[in-house]
Amino acid sequence: MNCSIKGCPGEYEPTQVTHAVRHRGRIIVIDHVPAEMCRVCGDVLLEPETLRRIEHLLADLPEPTESAPLYEYALSASASS
Image (cartoon, rainbow, N blue to C red):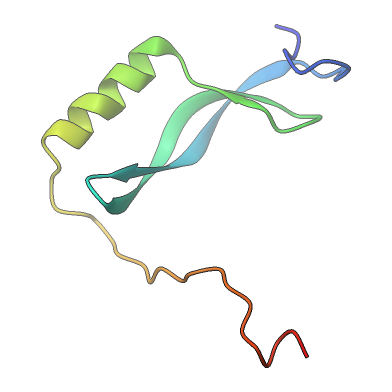
């Protein structure tokens, strides 16, 4: 399928992505999500069934397999000088 981004000559190809979502005030990261990705511009499409599966996963979250620190993006006064 051709990319849906105007002017992009790429096509979508099956792949797996890491999907991040904010859920109930927490950042949830889900690895190995099946998706279609344009190899030219990087646009990602998720199938409706994949989105439903993610919604079910979020409704009854299991214990995470890993955890990672979360950093806020902000310029400090010393970094902007």
